[in-house]
Length: 93
Length: 157
Image (cartoon, rainbow over all chains, first blue to last red; front, side):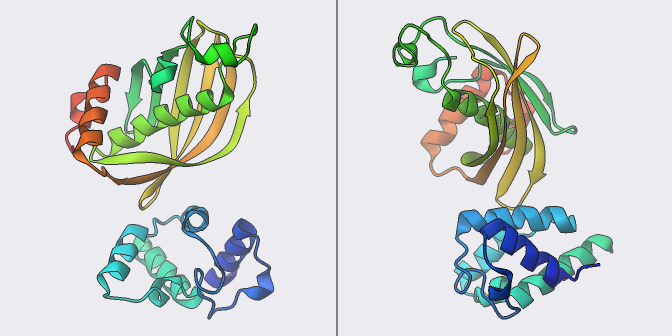
């Protein structure tokens, strides 16, 4: 079974036409991979479907705009995957 | 339908919120300036207006699901197919079902049927956001009443 990271990296590679070897756990989806907001919605839709979750993009955006967290918290690949794992665990609980 | 005013939906005929599904009726007008250009001597509904008709139908589903508290703006159309010509005067049955209710976005599958035959289909995505101003909100509630959106689907406005 693919890890969360492998699944998410695959989704980003397929959805945004980014070569897989350019994606690393340290990649920032926006700043490093250049994914814009519309393309990120494609990614979010695919992730929501793949993991059976609803990524709280609006809450994340509010957190970033409020300055309580940086975009790194949500958009660096390893952090994005950790947040997905939390959402999956919360759903299963 | 009043094509020049982008009033595509005549009436909501079915709204099944638990089933996340909506059906609307829309009759293509016999006459419209649109047909003067599309096409001279051979009037048919422009495909973009069929897509708009599906988008508005799915949009009412999204609005109904959030109690008209938020607006659904079209942001993406995927897998759009125009299968047959749609002439003036044609009655259309438009159906949309929710594929995904995301955070700040929604995805529907929609299709148009004329005389029992599917004439168009698309997967449509919306940005779902607070109304940008009171004018738009009031206008949408007015249209909601005209197309027959149930009152209890407007309780978030």
